[in-house]
Each structure stands twice: as structure tokens, then as C-alpha cells.
Amino acid sequence: MLKRVGTDNCLDCPLGKIRDGEGTLVVKNWIVPDAEVCFHGLGPGKQEAENGTPFIGAAGKKLREAITKAGYDVDKVSFTNSVLCKPPNNKIDSTMTVPCLHHFKESLKLMPNLKIVALCGCDSYTAITGRKVTLKNVYLQPFTLPEYDVLFVPIPHPASILYRADAKNIAYFEDGVKGVFGLLDAQKRTTKEPKYALITSPEKLSIALGLIKEERVLSVDTETTSLKFYNANMICFALSWEDQTAVAIPWKWSQGGDLEYFWEQKEREEIRETFREVFSDTNKAVIAHNSKYDSLIFTKEFGFPISNIKVDTMLLSFHLDSNQPYGLDDVVLRECPEFAGYKQKFWEKVTTAEKDNGTWWKKYQLEEIMRYCAEDASLTYSIAKPMLRRLG
Ligand code: URA
Image (cartoon, rainbow, N blue to C red; front, side, top):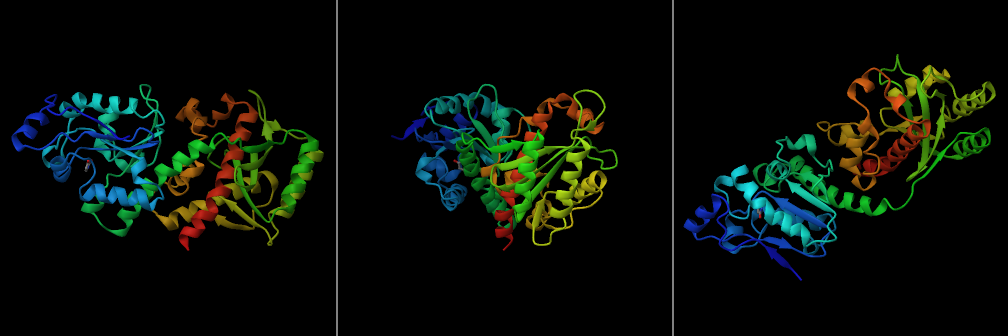
């Protein structure tokens, strides 16, 4: 049964007096107790303040339409706001949001199944985190906060498409809403263990190479010590041919000391000959993200490029929207958020200096890097098809 959170005659912040003067209402948070997703806005507009219900005006209608378009039932989501009384000119600040925050916190307690709070617009982001941001820098980037047990996901505010109703801006907003439900699916999917085979013995190697030769469509990713290809050594590479499935093969490694080849001469030759065949077979289609880099790395390590790249997901992302960040993680979040979410912790322990000076890998075990690489290959495989479909 629907619950409402707020106080009828609230005077906790300066907006209370304004509301009293106007004779409008406190717009109590709209709480569906079973909700898994809650959309958190800035504050009520005119229609909301007259009626007492959040997100029922022009912007709210756009939000409800986008939720429906994403295939989700609007009656199953909750709607909350950073302030419960109408702010003049839609401007809010901390003298209003800080005293009002307890309504949001109380609301969360009434939703035991809540997984995601979608923060609509920068003001609601600031109200919750205390930080000012530009939306494009945080768009669909999920984050957690120590005092909350949910995932926060920033998306544009629906009013942004009233002010700028061009197709690109509308798609940006609607993709944001779609992304929220994609992340919800991803959270549910994380219980499924991905099948990443780490190839560390000659027996496993010959099975993996045999499988790779048979596949027609393969994605590939390399993990290297540095992003500058002239300084880079390949630690491992991975191939995928199915969602959440990949094999990762080590190449050069040393725990702490100078890098050495992982395999004996015989296995190295076997690997090279397999990929000489696989990467030149025009009946196969190879997919990569930033294929130029991977091809250069193979040229450097194996002596030949990947000649049969048919799809580069980084280039597809440029075709879809050249103004957006193009790293694999960004593209996954934007285009196929249902596949995101299970690898974000990897880079947390590495500093920018360690990335820049090419020593980041020393903090890891080989297996961890191989798993990461397998995941990137698998993500690249998984996003290619929906991106191609979107391009028509
Ligand atoms: N905008 C908001 O942020 N909240 C509402 O309730 C309506 C419009």
C-alpha cells in the first residue's frame, strides 16, 4: 500500500513560509513499499504543489513516459524530492535541502527492497552528496555512499528535455532512464557467475586454442603494462564468443621482478601460429574496443596485426554519439548498462601515477589481471550486437 512521507505544516526550512503564504501544499514523498527503484528530483513544481503529488506536471509526465518506454511499470517506482515544498524559480540550496533530508532518509526505511535511487539532475546529486557536479561527468555512473544501502545513479532531470526538446537531448534523457533499469537488471544478474577460463597450463592451452579456431565471431582484448604502446608489454589477452564467457591467456609475467614469458618456447609458438591463422581468416569477424591499440600490441608481441577486425565498439560509440566518453566502461554504462557493474572495483587500489608509469600491474596477482581482461573481452562481445542494432 502506498505510503507518503513529509509533514503537513513543515517549517523546517525557508520554503515553509513561502508555501504558507502561497497556500500551496507540502508534496510528500510518494513511497511504493515494494519499489526497487526510486526517482529523486529537485523539488515540486507548480502543479505538484497545488495537488500535493510529486512528478505530475510537465516534467513528471516526461519522466513517467520514459519509465514506461523503458518497459517498466510506473506504479512500481517511488518518487521523492530533495525539498518537499515548491522552491521559487526551481532554485534550491543547502539551507533547504539539509533540513529536508530526513524525509528522504525516512522514505528509504519504508522501502526494504530498494536497489537504486535515480538522482534526477545535478541539484538532487548535490542535495545527497554535498558535491557540485556537471551531469555529463557523472551520467549513469553508479555510486554508493557509506550511510546509505542503495546504489545512486545520476541521470538528467526530466525538465531538461522541456527546455531543450531536440532529439539528441531527449535520447540522452531517455537512455538515462533506460540505463537505471538496465543497472537494476545487472544487479539481479550478478548472482550468475561468469564463465571465465584462466588458461595457465599447457593442457588448458591446447583446449582453448582449439575452441578459438572454431569460433566465427570473437572479441579480443589485451592487458598491457602501459597504455603507451611503445612502452607496453602484453601481460595477457582474452577472447570471448558469448555473453559472460571468455578465455584469458597469459603472455608475460613476473610477480614483482622483471617480466618474463609465461610459456616455454613450444607453447609460445603454438599460440603464435594459432593467432596467425585466426587473425588472418577473412571468414572470421574479430571485435575489439580500440582495435588499433590491440592490433599494434599483437604486432609488437607476435609479429603480425589483427587483419580481420570487423567491428570496433569504440568507433561504434562515436557513430552513436561522438560527444560522449568512449572508454569501454563508459560505453557499457551508456549503451548496455545491463552488462555493467561487476568490475568497477578493479582500478580502485591503483593510483594515477602507477597507471602512468606502467607499474600498476605490480599490485595484482596474474589471475586477477586475467579475470579483468576476460571481463573486458566479454563486455566488448556483449555490447557489439545491441550497438550495431541501434545504428541500424
Ligand atoms: N520536478 C521535480 O524535481 N520534482 C517534482 O516533483 C516535479 C518536478
